[in-house]
Image (cartoon, rainbow, N blue to C red):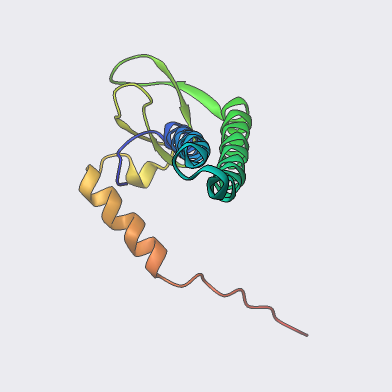
Length: 134
């Protein structure tokens, strides 16, 4: 994991980033009218449309993270003793960033070993299901 944060918090971070990009594009697009006059209206229109698309993407991500947040199980972190949401088999505490897992095989591994196991799992092809015909 690059940011070493809880998965739901990572989704929310991407939503916030899209919001900021969308607002920035809208402001810069509108500033095109000030700098280029009549020709800047085209820049303003492009900035407003792309900014609106970015804001709608942000809305979708926030909605998705909210729906995930309501449906995942909440557990108590063994380190900081605060309730945190566990998304998937392995996640991090939303407060102290301790690695949490429901998989017994990964319960006593370090951060580097977890990342290495996840990279290996991504690079290996999925097992093929075999069907037998009689």
